[in-house]
Structures are given as C-alpha cells and as structure tokens.
Length: 96
Image (cartoon, rainbow, N blue to C red; front, side, top):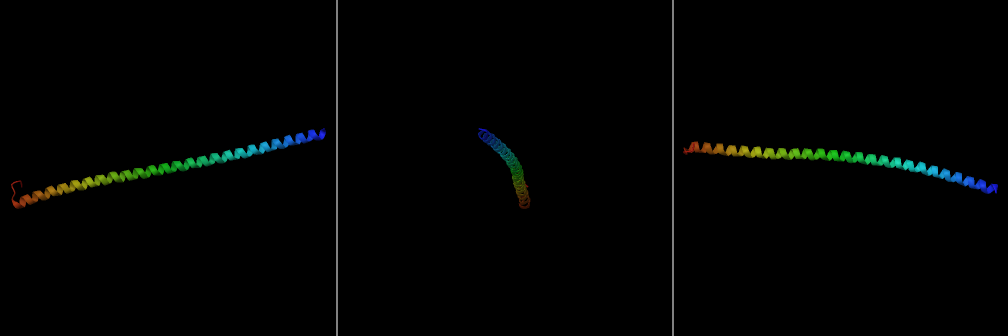
C-alpha cells in the first residue's frame, strides 16, 4: 500500500512539474506574441507615416504644377495681348 501511495505522490509531483513547465512555456509564448505585435504595430505606424508624407509631397507637387501651368497660361495671354497691341500700332489700326 505504501508503494502505491508513494507512486501516487510521485505522479502528482510529476504532474505539478509538467503544469509548471507548461505555464512557463505559455508565458514565454505570450511575451513573444506581445513583442511580435508591438513590432508589427511599429512597422505599420512607420509605413503609414511614410505614406502620408509621400502623399502630401505629391499633392504639393501637383498644386505647384497647376499653379505653374496657370501662371504660364496667364503669361501667354499677356504676351498675346501685347503682341496684338504692338501689331495694331505698327499697322496704324484704330485700336492702337
């Protein structure tokens, strides 16, 4: 009977040791999962910030291109008016 009780105590001790080892392994896995999640969030944030910077830079370039095109068109209009006036003066047109 003593051997059976001793074997039972030994089995319980082994079971407790296995549970403790499983708990350690589980906690290590949880820490690793948290670290992976934190890295993923950091990378996602960096990607988002970089994408936003690139989008803003592209938007600025587009606005500048439109502004430059409008300025060039305005310059062309002024040049056309000036050339027209000069031609009228040279030809003696009444609008000169």
